[in-house]
Length: 88
Ligand SMILES: [Cu+2]
Image 1 (cartoon, rainbow, N blue to C red):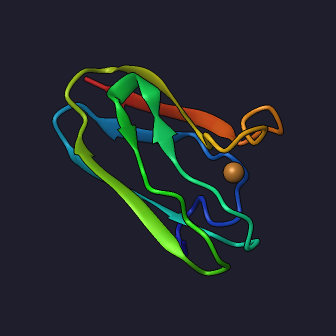
Image 2: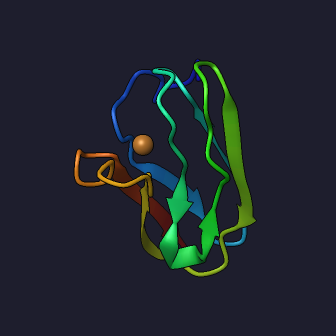
């Protein structure tokens, strides 16, 4: 929030391999969501309630293109997914 991707829907996130990464999910609509990175084996607990926040913190070890998504039933299909680019 407050940066270049503030307000962007499903922003493409870019980090460098080996960097420590923290991705925050701010619940803006009060509906239950989460944030999952299946390619990296990461998933937050459900975030419930408007203005609630959850986060994933990890080290991006291997470069590649990973998908992040909301794993709540139907949400990915409704468009809640984007890409995380890990560059060398
Ligand atoms: Cu969701």
